[in-house]
Image (cartoon, rainbow, N blue to C red; front, side):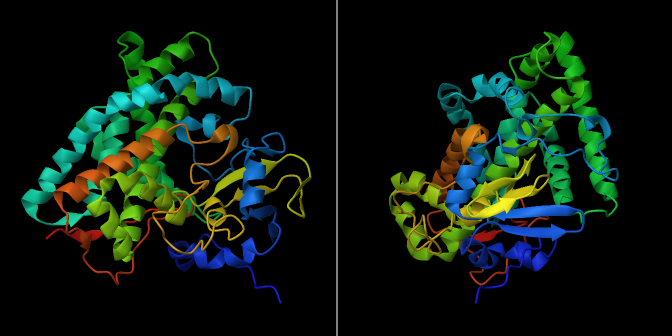
Length: 398
């Protein structure tokens, strides 16, 4: 008898450990879930997820208009890379691709190392270390804020806005949007609207200036698109790497045998980071939309469905990965889909990998006895199911 499917992203217990609920989804074709007027297709198997993510003609990134209760403020009617298909997606991606070339990313390495050193100097001085508060929440937002030309004194505010907006993912459909979420949308929109105006009269070498120039030269973005694009770069550019560092540290800490190896040999870190991404990656799922009925993996997904591409389930598919529930930093090959697949493959993946590598190298060099403060801890996760990240991760450093 087939195991019963349970999938409820608004259940805190489900969000705390969704992996135990993925096995029934991996055992068969995409599961169709009807919730009132909304139809969801739960796509979990590796072959199905990769096929759908490569097929942007049948699985579109352009969703339906937001419901009336969804507050958007200055972002109303906007589009960005995440929510567009070709040819618009191709043009939007090209606008930022120059800042994410391998050479540009390599040029950032000395500055990222400097930021990591400064953060760990503070940790060493106070002799206590919460990986999230002291490193993971700070390093990525500092890097992306500098790329956007944002002054460092605003980093904490940016992180708050980012976390609050993402936490809105957990709002039950039909429920009023929380006041703090509306406030964060307004404050972030107001800030970047003012910054965009400043860049028009005083452009710099930063990403915001480049996007303003593209907009003003009559390229593909409306004013709302420009605002949405800049915000996407801020949020996506910090949240995913923050969660990679946090989830990865937790996985290492819960597997001391795996933790010892990169302590002895830091050259193992790149492969270890790939396993962190596979085993407990920062993104659980991404969404596509069907404009017409489509066959996938033995199921017919109806038109108008929200197709959840559960990349975290695909990364534990036994048809693709041997012993998928085992955390193994020597795993090879490891063709996970933590950064997506197809035309929407994460443009910031090389930056995220480098930031994570530098963070772990710096931590292990400075604190070679690093370990979880409480190996039996029950971690608390932030609100969003889609972006999986820890609230806190205390570690011991002596």
